[in-house]
Length: 426
Ligand code: ADP
Ligand code: MG
Image (cartoon, rainbow, N blue to C red; front, side, top):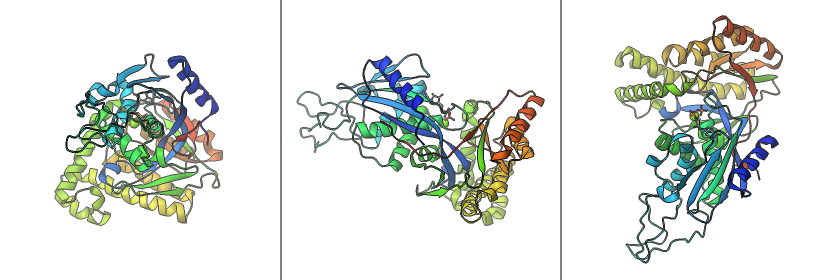
């Protein structure tokens, strides 16, 4: 699926009006929805997200100096910084996402071209800590690439998007992945997609400060049309698993509760710490190494709350494996009960649901969905409902009515399709 032409045109037009130039190119990356596998990624386990047909588009042009300027349809002001100042402490607000990716590329080995002090051959900039300039040996005169490749050159970027923000569809990974592929091309870095996913994660962890796993960026970079990305978060091995929703007459309905999950960074970190504590008490490095059969022993060793947190992660890993197996053997209509069980586990064991998500899931099922669950990190954001095409109006109605009855803010419902991952558009 191509990013809608309007989105590409809006990005080009926005670029021209901000920077009075033509962009060198246009790149895009999708948001993602997680079909199943929640809070398993940082436990080294399994996830099954797919890239969606909502995209973030980046128009970008290299400069001949070291100035970086980023602007977005979101933000009134362009943010300007020199590559020499590009360290996490200097990056704030929305621009921490695109600028954080530029910084993180340096951490992964991109030479951000710290210029030599005249004739001394010494690097004097902070842009790539721990790295030596190209050709530097034991303090001999460094041969800088003189901007031979694109890296080391500043850039201007303008960002447009139709990925809803804060809905649990990872607008953050979309912007990171779009900027990642754009700079990878323009700076001629040659990083593969798995590396770019880790770059995006590093930016999110270290620059934005959100302790998220590798799932979102992987989905945004590795997604394929009509397929999910089955990802082993321990070794980052991935496999594309056909979904077959179309042939089965199914749609994936997103129910955006409009409950902002941004206030929940504390809850996310807290769950992460519980998982680490559980793993330590069970003598494993990651909860991935605990199986469903180990749960009785875990119940004896752990306090009640930590046990429930661990049980969610362990059973959720198994549900991801079962979902992949079921998709291959039984087709998508057979995965409904796994989605339902995932929701119950997040609601009761991991305790990351909110009333709006529970109501959305219950109403969707009552309206005819064959399976439904909250998706994303929790505490708000969206639920998903796997729904026969003909039942979409009934499910939509059931959810809107249930929300109105409880006096909740009206949710937004829309269908998403599995789409291709990040790519160059022009
Ligand atoms: P999500 O669930 O959508 O990923 P996050 O809180 O992780 O929510 O990321 C959303 C943040 O990412 C926004 O508040 C903004 O700072 C940044 N962001 C996402 N998309 C854009 C965009 N198109 N332009 C500018 N900033 C963006
Ligand atoms: Mg995010």
